[in-house]
Every structure is written in structure tokens, then in C-alpha cells.
Length: 255
Image (cartoon, rainbow, N blue to C red; front, side, top):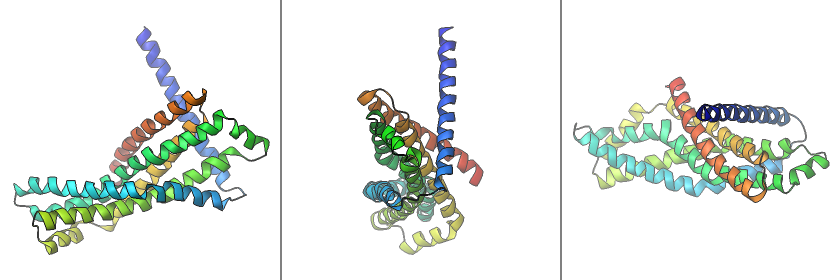
């Protein structure tokens, strides 16, 4: 009976969390279309989420493409299909690996920082001070971060896709000896614009997820410094799980 009680409490807690998260998202949507528009906050968060994550995205995208080319070459060589390495790298990066890996990296870097920053403001009563000054905390803190995530994640994903293909080209052509013209020709033949658009759409959804989870966990932080640390950890874990689950759903709908 204790097990079923624990299971029931866990299910109820999960439903409550999802409900609070959706309510926060709905409130943010309402405040997004209401003045005043604080452009400085939008650009500040876009710089933090996007520009600040550029190096780690470049690094992970490059080595992901290189490893993918190396592994697919050895697999395709058994079937004398080495020419398909370029198309495989490009399709894998644009459809799946680019959006997912970029989102996970930004979650670890920016999503955790969002939860920690807003959580610290909550436990130090700075959010209550915004209410006292007649500044809506959702409009001031949540909306700029959600917009930054939706805008910057597709841009970071496009960079990751490009760098991943470059890394695959470097390994496939320069290291493994695949013909350069054949490598590029297969990319042009098999990769369509729809693959790129769908991958960027995924990235926008992932950007919304990671920023929303970070804002939610920070906004409802309790318990002082220990609560901030707990909220930061939970935001990374929950956002990563939701990104992977959302990737499956979007892939099933798009492809």
C-alpha cells in the first residue's frame, strides 16, 4: 500500500507541476502582447542564451559531425556505400542531432542559470519587490527569456548543423579519402529544405521548453540556498527529459 500511495502522490505532484507550468506559459503569452515592451531585456537575454552559448555549440557540433562521419564510414564500407557518408551526416545533423544536442547543451548552460537566477530572486524577495513597484514579474523576468529561447535556439542549431557537416567533410574527405565532389553531391541529392526547416522548428520548440522549465523552477523556488540548488538541478533534468520526449513526438509528426 505504501508503494501505491507513493505512486499516487508522485502522479498528483507531476500533474500539479505541469498545470502550474502551463499556467505560467499562458500568463507569459498574455503579457507578451501588453505594453510596455522592454527591448533592452529582450536583447540582453538573447545575448545570454545565444551568444553566450556559441562556443559550446560550435565545439559539440563540430565533434558530433566528425564522430558521425567516422562511424558511418566504417559501417557503409561493408556495403561499398562510402559515398553516402556526407548525406548521412547532413541528414542526421539537420533532422535530429543538431536540434537535440544544441538544446541539451544550452539547457546545461543557460537553462540552469535561468533557474538559479530567478530562484535566487525568489528566495531573496526581489520578485516580491517587483510586485511592490507595480512591475509584473512574469512580464519582466519570464517573457524575455522565453522569446530569447525561441529565437536563438534555431540560430544556434543552424550554426551547429553547418559546423557538423564541415566536421564530417574534414574527416570523410581529408582523413578517410572519400571523393570531395561525391561527398557534396550526395548532400545536395538527399538533403531537402524541408529537413532543415523541420529541424529548426524542433529547435524553436526546444528553446521554449528549456526556458519555460528554467523560469518555472526558478519562479516557484522555496527553501533558501538549498532550494535554489535543488531547483537548478531539477530544471536541467526535467528540461532534458522533456526535450527528448518532445523530439520523439515532433519526429513522428514531421517525418
